[in-house]
Length: 327
Image (cartoon, rainbow, N blue to C red; front, side, top):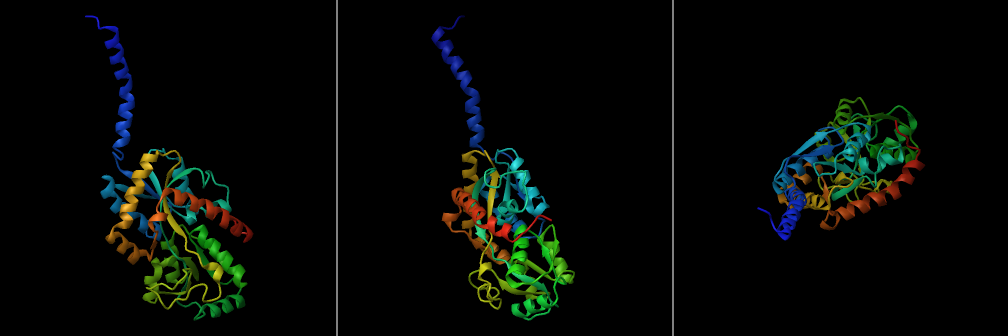
């Protein structure tokens, strides 16, 4: 039986539309399988802790698990580079930060563009740094520490975990007229372990190591936050000890590969925003990291994109002027 020409054309048009409809349906059910979140630093550090807390809560919103993959090395650039090269389908994202997405481009040639090769998902929060020292380090306060370092140039050692910590160490030497060795580490946890054991003398890192200060295993000389931490009120701010240039708190944010569909970014952002609004998550982030959670206006993809751009413009000249080089 022959079909009338009009009916035949209708059927043909419908068949041609099926692939497009199928593609739309697939996009609407994202995610349909587990998502990989790359953490560009070892397990146990602040970035890893944040990633695991966020992944656990985002799973509820997304209906799929988020698998954490620690990809270490290169001051975070190896893990970030893997994200840049991943398929832009929303199934590979990274827990980025100031140290991994801004600073490296100032000291080395990257195989990706830090500003253009990623889709920002949203800002999460900020974390101040502290200058820690082994418990036997001479100097009961910062001025005494500086005096000892000046009297013993090159004898102390500093553990570099990220490029940010490298930058802070280099700037500290420049601002105080001191000199000490810079020892590279692949992550915060091994650096703090060596600090506790007395194998190195100094480390710039976040509040996650305050537990060791409380237990007497190490000590801390200052914090880069604008105000003293409520959990460590005896530690002065950088401004209070005469180093106002060190008043800066690095940030955290999530990123996807360039070209990831807007609808996928919106879903991931929504899950992150819901996580940050959860009272249980907020309490865990405060207790574990002393993290200053971003306000809603800073949790958007647009804000995180602007933050990366503005920090590149601000910090690259500072880092280059300090003469910091890739080791």
